Image (tube, rainbow, N blue to C red; front, side, top):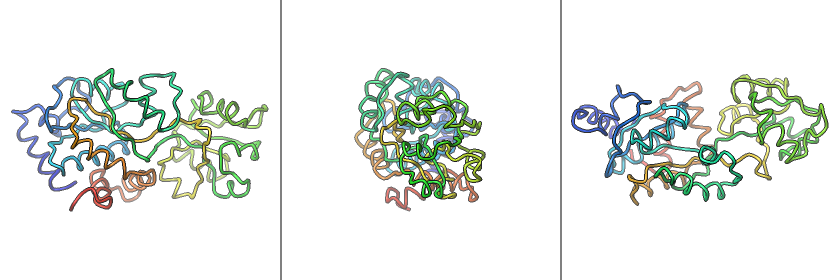
Amino acid sequence: MTSRARKTRLAACLLAVSTTVALAGCATADPTSSGGEAAEGDAIIVGSFAFPESEILGEIYAQALEAEGFEVSTKFNIGPRQQTIPALQDGSINLIPEYNGNLLAYYDTAYEERTTEDVDAALPDAVGADDLQVLDSAEAEDKDAYVVTKKTAEDNDLEEIGDLKALEPFSLASNPQFGELGYGIPGLRDVYGVGVEAGQVTFVPYEDFGGPDTVQALVDGTVQVADIYTTSPAIKAEDLVVLEDPENMISAQNVIPLLSKDIYTDKLAEVLNGISAKLTTDDLIELRDRVEGDEKASAATAAEEWLTEAGLLDK
């Protein structure tokens, strides 16, 4: 964490008796508590979901804004959207890194938009109902993907999901819900014509949602295809191949800032849009690997060093 960040958050906690925003930044604050007034002016309370990648992104937002003179505090590891959206509504937080496809699905479970452009275009009206708004989305995505080993891809000329027809019969590892999801087994059949005949695709459920057990099953040949998230460090570590999805069966899941309308300023938008313009999926993979891998770097350290390398933060 930058020295500016440490000093700002320490000062915030010391002044907690006189300002609600400062209270939100204290280490003793309950990250899941509701209530509290929305911050005004340049005061920003950055939240995150309860997983490492979201906390890293929250740190990136917080440190970049802090460096530009905003008063910033954080409430990380809040929980799912059923908690983060109400927190944005009641002012417990007023900014959070989101994922555009899943955010749209929260407001419209029957949404049909799939590309980044279409999902982004639908979001302003969807979130506007809660007096929220989004800014520019990043190229960086964290979404489900059909993944194979490099050897399997090369031996069978696999580049796209539809090419899996050449691999039939094969086994596919994923979370238990994948057997019923529109971009899971039904989508393979209906969108890409894979597994149309019975027995051509054997579904092998794993409970770790693309985690170590799923990756190991793919690498050791227990299965030939696996559903692994695009920012998993295993994709690079194990030299895996993400199959392209030309039909956009899997909705875009770009990182996007979601904020309360009452904190919007042109300056805030410039800072956050600057982050989105630089952040890539490869960056997310690298950041996750630093925090979740052997290095065990803190989210704050990884965020600070990424911002510096991206030219968005002066040391």
